[in-house]
Structure formats: structure tokens, C-alpha cells
Image (cartoon, rainbow, N blue to C red; front, side, top):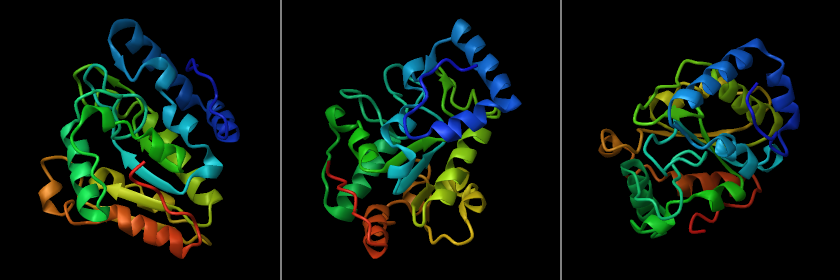
Length: 228
């Protein structure tokens, strides 16, 4: 099986999924990939999103697709990069919208690309595929990760009265039917993806950060300090 320390706060979910045959097949695939190729993020950061944001702390979810596939970038949080790594285009666009929306200027400096502080406040930064081969975007899609992460998001939706789901792009938005849980009053914020291909088609000006905080305060939850 996948070699990892079970994230604190997600024990029941991980225990249940580990009993399923698809995860055994996924584990075999990932281990064979790591034996033959450079795989991102590093093994010990595969489940960084879960470690940074325990299930009971989740207030906001930002869904990504798969990790960055160049050296030193991915560290297990969607859209985030390690400290002192040049900002990828999607993250630069996220920061542009952040400044426009809530007047938070993180600039374009490599030292500011790590979004761990958001995760520690309750923003689950989860890619639907948790690993990728160097230089090959999407190379680990369709291998089982999507079942695992969709199940995780479904648990979030079913165990919280209110969560803000920020769904950028069609891939993330396709998850919405799995998250609309009876008896829960979740908020869905949808727009085009922040990538250069689609940011000017409606991502810029969509104000996801202020909308998320408005939804949180309306539900008597603490807002996110996006400047942190």
C-alpha cells in the first residue's frame, strides 16, 4: 500500500479507503512510477493537504487538478508552491485577483507562493490527482486518485453544515454533484480556471475571496485572512 503516515484528523476516512481494492492498484502504480521516474510532490508531501487541514477544521475548499510537474514546485497543496520558487502562471493570476478583490498584494515574489497559512486556517487545498510525473501534466490521472479525492470531498460535504467550495474550471465544477448534500447549506463559488488560457474569460473579476468570506460570516464562521 501507499507508504505514508496517516494524516491526523482524517483517520476514519483513510482507514475506510485503505480497505478498498482500487487503492491497492493505485499504490502499486505509484510505487512503480517512483521507482522509474521523478514524481512530484515528494513522497512525504503526497498528503500535505490533509495534514495541513484536519477534517474538522475545513471551512473552504479550493480544488486543483494535479500537482505542478516541474522540479521544486509541488508540495502537496493545490496551486501552492514551495518558498522561493517562481510563481507559476495560474498562481500569479490568483494573486492578481486576490489584490483586485480584497486588496491583498502578495506581489509576484517567489517567497510568497506558499499557501500553507491558508490551509492552516481551514482552506483545504486539494488536487484531485495527488501525484504527477516530472514534465508530464496529467500523467497520473485516471489511475484511482480521483476516486480517493472525490470520496474525501464527499466526506467534507457530509460532515459539515456549511463549507465554501471554490470550483475553478470545468474539472473542479464536475465535482459539484458529489458535494450537494441533503440537509447541508454549502456555498459554491464557480468561475473559469485561473490559467492563462481562461483567466480573462471570467476568472478575473469573479471575486472568490470576498465571496467566500461573506458566505463564512453569514454562516457565523470566522473569515479567512487571505493576507496571511
